[in-house]
Length: 385
Image 1 (cartoon, rainbow, N blue to C red):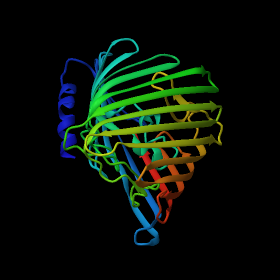
Image 2 (image 1 turned 90 degrees about the vertical axis):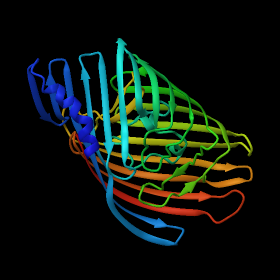
Image 3 (image 1 turned 60 degrees about the vertical axis):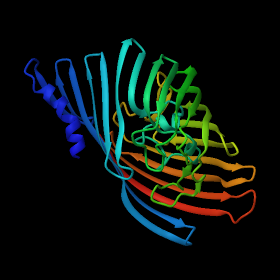
Image 4 (image 1 turned 120 degrees about the vertical axis):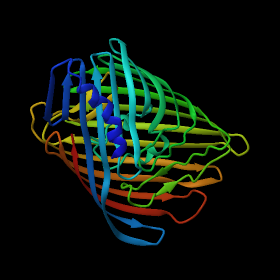
């Protein structure tokens, strides 16, 4: 908390200047302070999880856990239309900084951004944890980077987006994600050839190429549907790294209250003294907002959000997802996993949401060995502002 206070104090000092009239507003978006061209918003998120899961290594079934998944303070702001910034600090799980960036918009629809941010590679990573229809991201997302430290140029229009940047290891990453991923270029392009009020067709592609120092290592792990349960599949620590090359393809169709999304990821590790490794993952999901709203969509960033609640009503959604992660390559066999998930999501208001997810996991080993199974049930109470 002291770190957050230290980061907030300079901005608060600016507000104390008497040059402009000040206005303080508290609403569903948090605490907003306006002083002339300066605007600050203080918000946060709190995700409380209660889960039951198996522990195959012991073996034991029916282990229970109640813990804080996320407890985050978020400060964002802008100075006129020239500068935006954001600083997030996480106090639960993998504690540390999350978003710590600033950006400028020299011309309309073109943004130059630098700092610690979500790497623009996969829509699933870019979607906020406040609106994802499942308690955790898919098994396939183990191959994506999450946060990274660097800079990017972002552009977008009514039916397209483009992001391109240079990134190195993150200051800190989300629970279960390694901070090390080398340094190099990352880019993502999206296009919505159909984009109307009721129908959206989204296409996207992402690419990434990283290089490593002699001592860096990577690890790809996937939780079984709760970060408080043991990882269900892991590559182990991989060293002697030269380059990482990854590709992501995504397609989504939104038809009124129904959203279908698919994603495929391929990753290759070139290594100097050891055999190269090739991994891949796939995800297919469908969500239906029973109460009739459509899913929000930003074409200029190529990301779907939660239910469109412009009329202020609550929303109830059910969703299902199939996810796969292949960490077997020749004689290297850390398993091929698949996860089947089902969720029910009640968005009570802009600030309150309840979510229940059940996930059935299975990992088999092509070169032999007993399969590993895990079943996870989770209920989340969520406050965000």
